[in-house]
Image 1 (cartoon, rainbow, N blue to C red):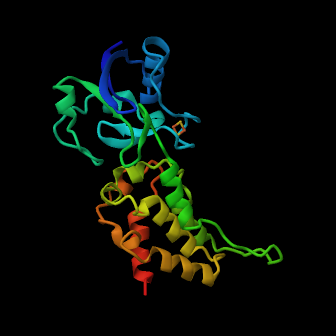
Image 2: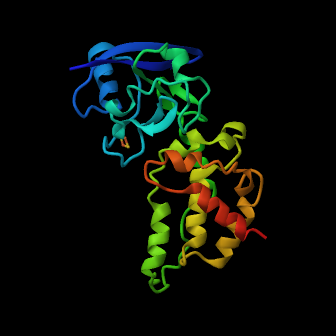
Length: 249
Ligand code: FES
């Protein structure tokens, strides 16, 4: 069994520091399991969020070697040697080697662009408010007949309904980093999904278009595809944003 170093950015109110833990790697071990090992065997004060452990709930999103990822689906073996100077697809405020000093290991930090509550737990309220602001639902009349949907439309919608609201896209987004008002990739991907949905009413579609037609909406995107690169469910927010731009009057 080999060992690796797990470096974790800790935070308690204003105090921020890096803790280093030596962890024995087991075959198939995920970063989430490594965090459990630290919490259960070494330091019970370590805080992180998780629920399903199966890449379904989106709770365990964090920055792993500077890339927003789900800890439960990231294998230790995939990332423990990522100690290069080159930042990966995600946000690179500090290069891994500045902290790792050339040693093999994994650097884990909280998701960027959201405030930290404690250690690896970020406050998701702002992210959820942004998503809610586009009113991501269908206003249907209970008396209406069921709407039949073409299978091809269902396939188009599925590309966006697969979102698990993990906020990895938000953590990777340079526009969200600059502008706290920016709706962000997850909300705008949902906007495209509800624009596209044949069950949406024209009045709601127009209202949504008016709401997102701004520098904090579709025009705020840098079109650098970082959200697309990190999405664990292969949702493509940038493509949705570009399609929405084409619908703006
Ligand atoms: S614990 Fe649910 S997605 Fe990782």
